[in-house]
Image: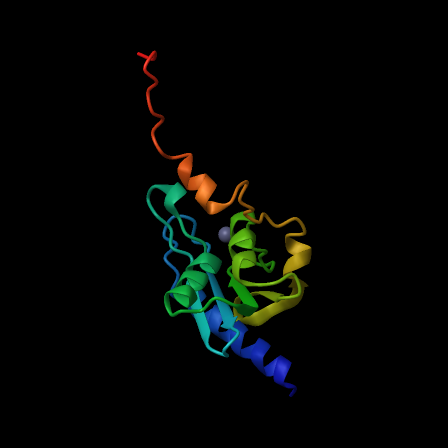
Length: 156
Ligand SMILES: [Zn+2]
């Protein structure tokens, strides 16, 4: 077994285990995700649904938050495992969050429960036009815009 396939298998197993711990009482659609940090550590998380549906957190973002909370800033591989007959794909929001910490060549493995239907896509293919924050002006100039304008003598 190559190192890549053993890493892939470990990530998929971690994602599958996180799927079983997901909180999905409303949809019944459990998803688990695992991310491999550039330092070799692995973090996972499941989807966390909420009675106010808009507050639901996807498994991918749950795993990313666990990693970032442990100091991770670079992710080198991702696995997502979900209930249902077809492997999932990360939603648009999760693609953008993954792109904050991973590059376009980062493999995103997806599978159904137990690792069935495993397939791999690169993050750059899932999100070809990632949003990047580019400041419109230098920080000092931007900060000065937040100063309340002074009144002129003729002003009211
Ligand atoms: Zn998502």
